[in-house]
Length: 239
Image (cartoon, rainbow, N blue to C red; front, top):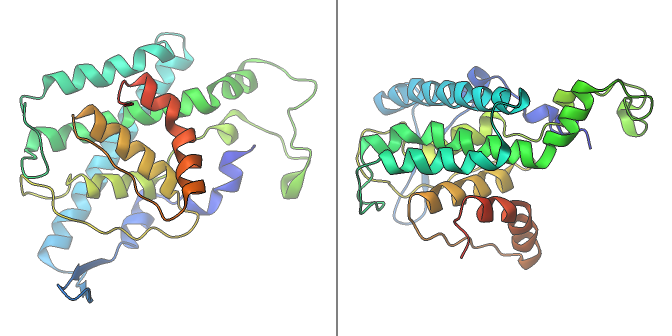
């Protein structure tokens, strides 16, 4: 599967992603009210989200390249996350107690989680395509991209900017308050809600929170749980 061919339309530059963000306040009766894009809160949040994304990307790339150079084993990645968690000095973390040091750790923790996700799901294919000269299998043989050369980057399963920005906002990275507010995020079809949900579940589990994921479809719940089950086990957050 050429993951980055299938998801090409969601692979937006971070600046394009941030330009397309709309913010709403939801009244007690459920009525949404659009927040002006030139408002003070919005103006402060956008640069913070960009900074968080850049921090995430730098750490993700560092980890991935260390793994590719055989300097970091896949099974050692969860230890990186737990080491970061142990540096936090907040023993009773809760949505009502979400200090700045926790927010600042979010990009790094997401980078470790998704580096492991990428490597465990597509690392073998990536190494095969980047280290071997293939006689068979180095060209797409079906679909609209038939005949095109398959490069390593096309098989990597990794989150895009939309997904990371969504997680940063959900986890309060762009806010000054030391508490998590209730948030309702609208993510368009095909923009990767499954990866958002799985990554969020792992991170919250690492921070000691009990996670409950609820979906209208038992099939979708089982499908997405199966996608991340090995991560839950590897990071020690499975029940």
